[in-house]
Image (cartoon, rainbow, N blue to C red):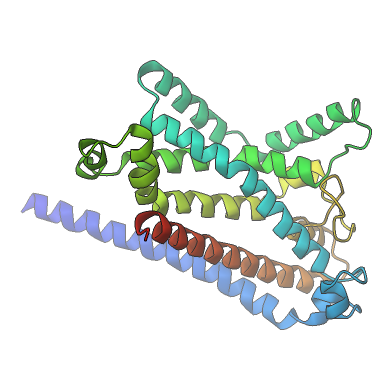
Length: 293
C-alpha cells in the first residue's frame, strides 16, 4: 500500500511538473503574441522601402527589421554549419572509439565547456578579433567572428547529443551488421548513424535555438544597431536578439517598445522555420540512408 501511494505521488508530481512547464511556455508565447502581432506589418520589416527592392537587394532598408532578420538567419546558419561537422565527429568518436581514461577526460572537458557563460565566449571572440587585427588589418569584430564564437558555444550540445544518441542504440541492432561482415566504419555509416538521427536532430535544434537567441556573444563580436545587409563575412551586421535588447532598454516611446515585441514574434517565427527545416532534413537523410534503392 505504501509503495502504491509513493508511485501515485511521483506520477502526480511528474504530471504537475509537465503541466507547469507547458503552462509557463504558453503564457510567455501568448504574451508575446498578444503584444507583438498587432505591430506586424510590411512597414515594420521593410520601412519605407519596397519589399521587392529590399528582397532583391536593390535598395538598402534603413528603417525596418529586414537587415536584422537577414543577419540573424545568416548568423545561425553559419554558426550551426561550422559547429555541426565538428560536433558530430567528436560525438561519434566518444561513443564508438574512445575508451577508458581518455573518454573520461574528454567527457569532463566537454561538460566544463558546456558550463562556460556565454559572456566569456563573447570576450574570447572579441579578443580573437583584436588579436587577428594585428596581423590582418581587415579583420574586426564581424559576422565570421560571431559565428565562430557561437559555434564554440553550442559544440558541447552537439557532441553530447550525438554521443548519447549513438550509445542508446540497442545491442541487437549494433551487432547485426558486424555479424554479417561489415567493418566498424560501415556499421557506423550505414546503421548506427542513421538510427541516431532523431537524437542528433534534437541537438541541432537546440544549437539553432541557442544561436538565434544569444545576445551576450554577438554584442561583443560584431553586431551593431544599424549596418544593413552584411556584404561579406568580415562585415558588421544586425541581429534580432540585439535589436530586442536595444529597444527594450532604450526605447523612447510606447511605439518603439511595441516594435520590440514585434521583433520577438518575428524571431520566434524564424526559429520555428529553422526547426521545421531541421526536421525535414532529418527525415530526408533517414529515408536516403536507411531505405536506399
